[in-house]
Image (cartoon, rainbow, N blue to C red):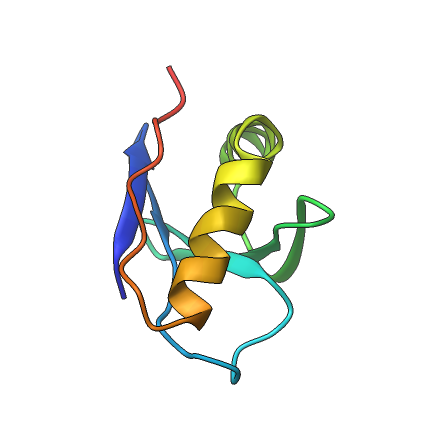
Length: 88
């Protein structure tokens, strides 16, 4: 599972899984916390993050929604995603 961004101890990853992994989303890892975020709604759909990290991830997702969707399309076609600028 490629890491596409990292910031403030938060790791953002997306899976290679053509046609088997909808809806468009990414995975977030922060210490022992895990979550999935829907790219289209920028909402956590599974798992949990601390409140501060959750706000950071959602803000980052909103800023990079188009890039996340482009990466989703690449991954669903079996192609390698590109890195996305971290939150600064």
